[in-house]
Picture 1 (cartoon, rainbow over the protein chains, first blue to last red):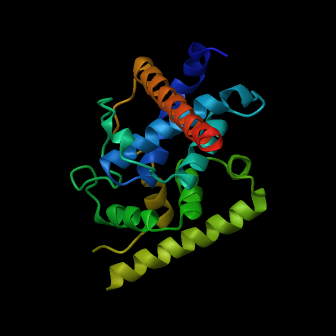
Picture 2: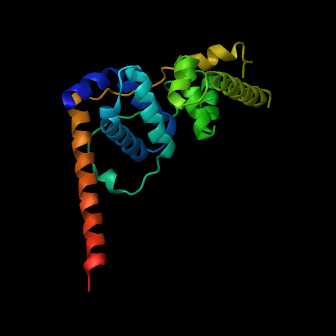
Length: 163
Length: 57
C-alpha cells in the first residue's frame, strides 16, 4: 500500500478531517494535534479500507472514532511546526453574520460527543443509511436519535430567543 | 433577536462554515512521517524501559 495511493484516495475528501477537527477541538494546539492524529489513523487503517464503502464514509468513521477517543496526551506534539492554517472552531462573528447561526453553533458544540457526531453528519447532508454505516447504528435508530437532537437544539434556541 | 422561521434551514445553513486552507499532499506526507517516527521512538523507549525492568539488577 503506497502513500501515493493513500493520498490519491483521501486528499479529495480532506474537508472531512477539518470538519471533525473543528467540531471536537478548541485550541489551536488541540486542533493541530487532532488533525495530525486523524491523518495518522487514516493512514494506519487504510490497508483495511474496502472499496465496497465510499471513501468519505470510511474517512468519517475513522475521523469521528479518533475524535471521540481523543485526548491530548502530552505537549510533545505542540513542538511540531507544520504551519497548518486553522480557523476557530466556532465561526467568528466576522464570518457569521447571523446571530442565530452563532447561537446554533454554540449549542451544537455543547452537545455530548456522540450527538455532535450525528448532527455534524446530518448538517453535512449525509444520508441516514450512510450515517448508520459510519456510526454502526441502525438506520432507524439514527433517525430517532437525530430527531431528538434536532428537537433539543430547536428548543434550546427558542428558549434563548425568548429570554 | 428575530424568531426562527425555519429551524431546518438554519441547521442546514450551518454546513460549510469552515474556512480552512487545504493541505497539500506534501504537508500530509510530512504529518505522517513525523507522527510515525514519533510512534516508533515512543515504542522503542517503552520497550527499552520494560527490558531494563525485566533484566535489571
